[in-house]
Amino acid sequence: MPRLRTCLSALLLACAFAAGATPPGFDGRAGVARVDQARIDAALSGLVDSGQIVGVSALVWQDGREAYFGAFGLADREAARPMARDTLVQIFSMTKPVTGVALMQLYEQGRFGLDDPVSRYLPEFAATRVYGGTDAQGQPLLLEPRRPITIRDLLRHTAGMAGGDAPEPVGGYYRAADPDNLDNTLEEAVRRMAGVPLLYQPGEQWLYSPAVDVQARLVEVLSGMPFGQYLQRHVFGPLKMKDTRYTLRPQDRPRMAALYRRSDDGVLTRIPDEQAYALNGRQRKLTPGSWGLVSSLDDYMRFARMLLGGGELDGVRVLQPATVRLMATDALPAAVGPGERSWLPSKGQVGFGIDFAVRVAPPADAEEASGEVGEFFWDGVANTLFWVDPANQLAAVLFAQWLPFGKVPLHKAFRDAVYADDSSAAAPRP
Image (cartoon, rainbow, N blue to C red):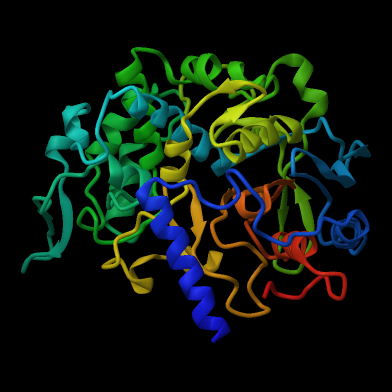
């Protein structure tokens, strides 16, 4: 019976979102998160003290006030510089939700429809083909897509696009096209992407991809403004996000966290700055929608608080509440089952909305990180994380800087500490 009630609750929440009703948390409190400073401190400092990570910082906002801040360890081990509240980090894929917000502002203005073909605005995608295996001579078969890629596909990662790490020969096509060259403009990068065959037919698989770079290019085409300039004028400026940018200023350097690489046996080695800050170190042409921004803890929390506020922060409206609800609603078709979702199920009981994962059911067991039905979130490859939990009127931002993603249970430790009851910091949510 408890499991049935849980499923019914999740179903009712999803129906409310789909119907445009205000879900729990956008105007009231429905959850049970109890933010405890000592519990979160212990979880984060323990990972630093054990040498598993170099440094970490976190910020939690709940019920209209700051509920937690903590910083532990070092932002720069070699310089013995502590992790601090104003430390700047590379947020990598946490750039994606920012891009989604920018594009959805233009959606609100009626500049496009979600089911419009991408080729209507970017004609180079009219000639995109789908890899269909090989012919009798072993040559690649490049097929017509069964239907065009839509903007909705770009937003929920069902476009069929793939990057340089895709299986061959698609990965090889992507690397040869070299869209990620930092001297490309965004226009040139996306033109090159359009010439790479799709790995899957549009709409048939969830596949994390460079589709968000195409979203950024759409912002340019629809607004008539360079993407970086658009973000500054319509997102960062209105939200007073003074630390979030692509290119570092000279005065930013002393605040940047170093980036480390963790070996399989736990040794953390610093990645040289000129390599780690390749995009940010000097003025470059490329402004990817998928990655590339640096930010501070307070800056990204302002972005998260805007989403928690249904698109508004401190009297400034960036999006309408209905648009935020749309972004935070699972948009994956039922036909895209668990086997067609790549590694997305590793994030937990989630679907995918517009540039966010969306929790659709409580954690299945104690191995899964804690979370609340209806929350939406994303992370970055250097182990940053944020989420917005409307049911508990809570937003959280977590910063760390190491590669590769995972290997240390930082995200689970933080989430469990935020949501645990007083008896256990690792207990799953009921």
